Amino acid sequence: MRQPALRPARCSSMQLTKEEKEMLEGRHGNAAKKSMQILVALGTIFGAEKMVAVDSVQVAGVSYDNLGDAGLEYLSSLSKDGKVRVLTTLNPAGMDLENYRNLGISEDFAAKQKQVISAFAKMGITASCTCTPYYIGNKPKAGSHVAWSESSAVCYANSVLGARTNREGGPSALAAAICGRTPMYGMHIEKNRQAQVLVNVDFPLESTARFGALGKFIGEKIGNKIPYISGIRNPSGECLKSLCASIATYGGTSMFYMEGVTPGKGAIPKEALHVSKGDIESALASMDDAGMAPDLVALGCPHLSLAELRTVASHFAGKKVKVETWLCVSRGVYLQAKKLGIAADIEASGAKMACDTCMVVAPVAGRWKCVATDSAKSCYYSRSKNKFKVRTAEFEKCLRYAVSGKWE
Image 1 (cartoon, rainbow, N blue to C red):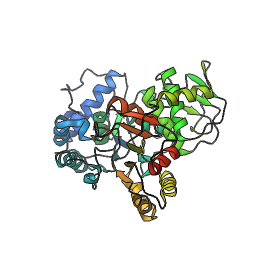
Image 2 (image 1 turned 90 degrees about the horizontal axis):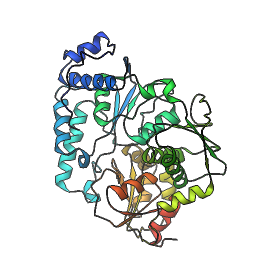
Image 3 (image 1 turned 180 degrees about the vertical axis):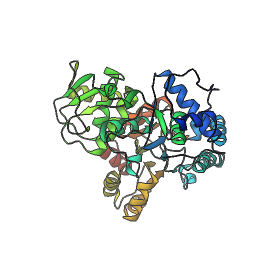
Image 4 (image 1 turned 30 degrees about the vertical axis):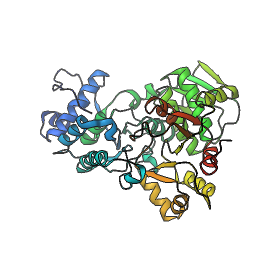
């Protein structure tokens, strides 16, 4: 998270307000000055004419496993006088902030991670530590401008909620939070939000695993183009969450249009892509290291919803898990589940509720050989970052395996 030295953008053609100029000149403190320098430099690179006020921010780059000491040093420097101006939440940390020992996280790592969270909290940021901020109160309205940085959350904000955000880096999102603004370019401008490829799905599609496979297929075919997805009827929020995560991971797009889901009317593009049932099965097969017996079941990438926790509880009722099982969830949703008695039912099985963190950002490389998941995004990072083998399957199949120890 270390930033390059940035010169005041006197040569920038951006039109700044009086207050924005004052931030750039350092009249609102050092953190605001550094942050405005970052935003002006970013806006200049992308040809933004001005800044736009944001309603909320979601900051990635929270896990010490990713930040390291350089990132921690940068955060500490900003926290000396930096204060956020809008609602700001955090992406998952590298551990459960309360029960990290139960997840096998070392005290050395925990000490550093706590310093990271302390620096963010000092700036007035809500330490919610989740990739699903829309479950815990950071849910922008359609048409509002925000500055979010986690790829699946960015895609969800643009595609499902109808908000407007670029895929920010951790530093630029934090800068937006401190200044309350972001450069007006990219996905903040209507003409840049138009669909470019019509994607036809002519068969019923259900389950988070298959929506993840759809995102993988589309992403690998069209890259960062914006698809207009046709043919899907009444998808659940959990399936949309899975699609957002996979299409952003495998293709890099910041949004899609879907009939009956995305607010507003998008024009139907001429370029077309057909998705067959065989394409989905092939995508699923490519994420399955057949023949491997998972020694970890990890669900919650992106973080689990309350509805998904209800499903887990119904499968685990009166049973004990036979395989190490992590259920990654925001602390906010966990507290809801605890109040309803759902969390207690799950924990009685021996499964571990991993709050505040996930398999993508936790320091878990080398601890297991093969992970079972329903998430295409988790598959990608389990292989690339942690060098695990992966069995990607339906959510319920992973739950059945957790309590039976038999891969059906």
